[in-house]
Length: 192
Image 1: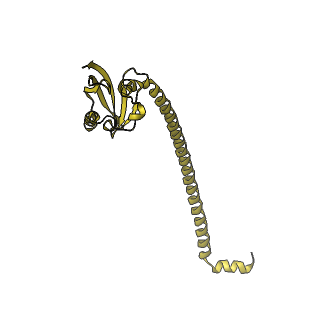
Image 2: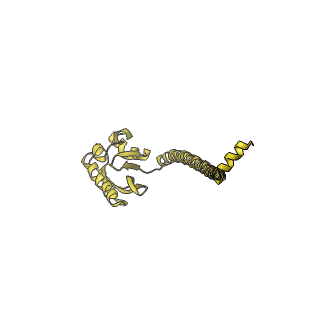
Image 3: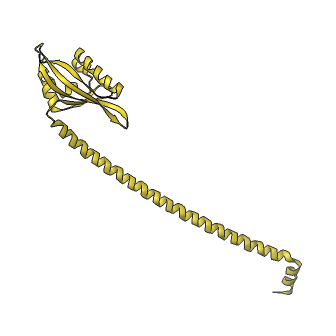
C-alpha cells in the first residue's frame, strides 16, 4: 500500500471500517437469505413432487375404477338380461332406458312390439292411457324416494280384452343420494 492510500484510509477514519463491516454484514445477510430461499425452494420442489405423485396415483386409481365399472356394467347387463322375469329401468323423466329380454317376451311381443318401440319413451308414449296409470306409480316412487309394490293390469294381447294382473315391484335408483331413475320387476299373478 502506498503512503497515499494509507492517508486516505486514515482520513477516511472509522468510516472505512464501518463501511467494510456493513458490506460484510450485507454479504452475510444475503447469504443467509439465499440459504433460506434455497431451503424454501427445495421444500417447494419436494411438495410439488409429492403433489404430482398424489395426483398420478389418484389418476391411476380413477382409471382402474373406470375400467372396473365398465367391466361390471358389461357383466351386469348380460346378467340382468339372463334374469327370467321382466325387469326394466327408467330415467327420472319416466323414459325406459333398459329392459330385459323377458320384459320384451312378456310385455312387448304379444302386442307386436319390440324393445325399440319402448326404449327412450315414457309409458304413456308407448301404451297410451294404460301407461299413464303406470307412470303415476313411478312418480310416487321418485317423489317419496321409496319403493312401491302393487298390482298393474295389462290386456293378454292386442286382440283380446282378457287382462293379466301383475304384481309389480318398483324402486328408485339412487346416485350420491339423488334419485336418477326407477327400476321394476313384474310377476304374473293371474289371468282374468
